[in-house]
Length: 139
Ligand SMILES: [Zn+2]
Ligand SMILES: [Zn+2]
Image 1 (cartoon, helix red, strand yellow):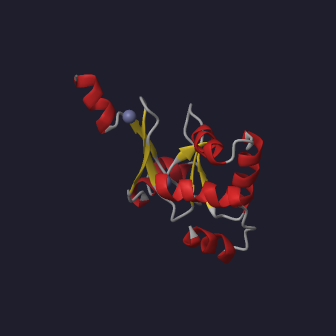
Image 2 (cartoon, rainbow, N blue to C red):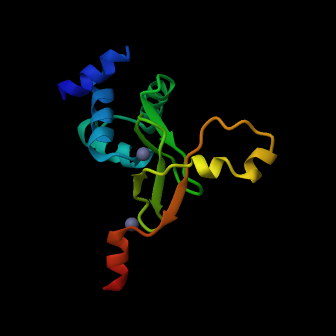
Image 3 (cartoon, rainbow, N blue to C red):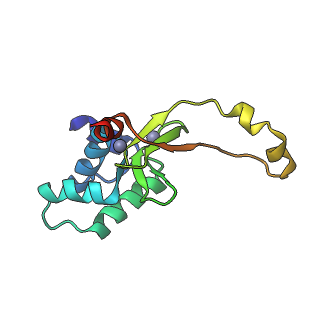
């Protein structure tokens, strides 16, 4: 717990019990959406609202401490910010995992240079079925 508190203090983020719990969840479980966060925080703080969680998340996103992972056709997931990386998403259960892909060759392709855009950042979202869900299907 102390560790999380230090992480927040280092970034000059006001430490509150809710924020500590929120960041601990993200640290321990990785990518979570707003409902998953709400359901686990509600156990500790029965009066917490979705709006409070959004407010806390947004404050920490502004501070670049938390990052929003935008997933097409699904609710955003949140994680503690680190280097830009890509994700695989399970279409069945919504599980999200980090993947390490070098996108530099993709970014050099003609389609992108012909668009006239100057690339700033790029990350991939790959969707599929996770191991657990594949196993469930085979049963
Ligand atoms: Zn799955
Ligand atoms: Zn991630």
